[in-house]
Length: 227
Image (cartoon, rainbow, N blue to C red; front, side, top):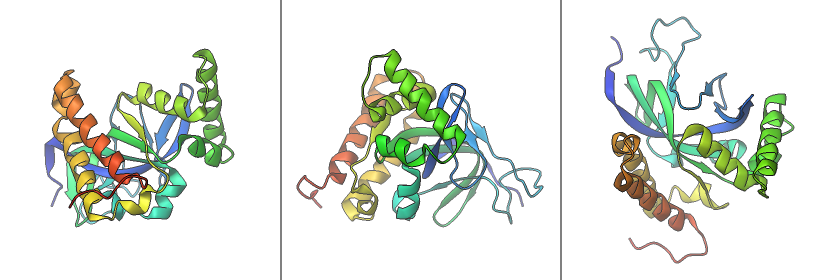
């Protein structure tokens, strides 16, 4: 049995960690040696020898979950980068999400951009390079604040919206009202993708609205959302 080929993408949630190449910050898998290239899809490779990834009976492929509350809170805190990604090509469906052949981020959320940089800057030469690249960009544009500049750098590189999450948000995704808003973000990020790629401002505004609503729902200082 082979995985079905999907012409239209599915959307799912996943986390990334911060890495770098010669041009600045990049998104990396926290569990495998995989880097998402800017403005191009990442294609899965099976290191166990499967001819086509993802394959039935193997764990290969690029992962995404149907809901962010399925991500372990400690994983989200360690990586600091959450987002919706598109999966297409060969896709294997699981109870809680999918494994896909191709992947590209659609919308990104940073728990705290400054903390993402501070926390991982000493972890590897690549991430230290990302920190230097972000600082250099800030100086060139006369900007202050590493966090503000990291958001801008990721937006420019990947061509997708990047937002900052409230610090207390990881556990809040399990709440019913917030979970429903997260589902709307996932659905809109993938359903409106063809129109956004053509420059449709209405489709872009729709995604912005559902993201803003999610961010409002995650803020602990606001009243509870209506049921």
